[in-house]
Image (cartoon, rainbow, N blue to C red; front, side, top):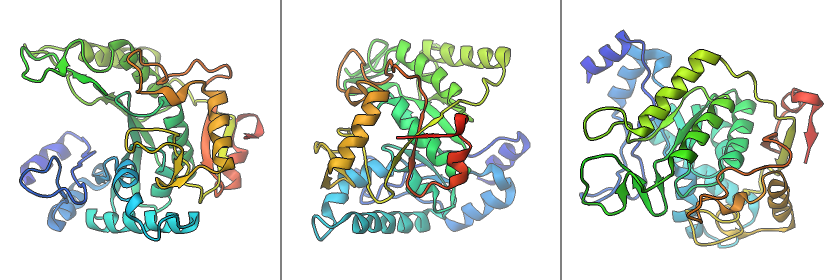
Length: 334
């Protein structure tokens, strides 16, 4: 391990997105595990790499909390403030176990609650897959990142609900293949949109190479994005003059999503109230059809043809005045 770290240091690289901590998943047959770095290894990473050690990723845990834990919280039907405290207590414990030097790949839209703890270095999301609309996803991610001074990254998934895109010579998995998973068209559009969202890093999760070791079509898309960025430079600051604000304690989330069959729920276990339907309606006005993301083979809903442009960030009611004042045009609020 020490030799690897020295090589990373020599090349001025970063260690980013170490992941594998899924509570309750330990055991020889577990898909994941409750993996956490030994304290001595964490200390060595920090000592040798400094700011280039970005910490452990909490690994899509907001979605896993909603799907696996929120319904277990007692008393059932407790109010919004208690639901927030349940969520907070769960992730404080996880942060302690992971060393409180963290990044987050969110799987829903709870990034504000993570970043306010002051121990997160990066925030991002996988897009496509069986996950939400990318525009609304990043409206929340940008809003959280700007408020807490944390950069964001972009990731595009090879998966969808029915399979995953692979370019190996043969596979025993009938759900894998060059015609499975996310279409190349959607993958390319999502990748470039993340560049325009001012992500500090973008990429794909897998399948960059074909069975001969050359670039796959996915790898070619990524190589093309590098060339495009080198040719055209920084795209400039994305203009988001509209802030869609929800109450800090609301726990609002997408009306339907991967992590639970329950629909129209906040904090994973309380039914939408009138204000939550208003939030859904406002986002539906800006990003028509966003609720359909991942549920249809034609990939509708992942990127909406919005009549107003991709103009919004989502913030919570504790957003400071300076953040709202610095929006282009002085700030508009929904």
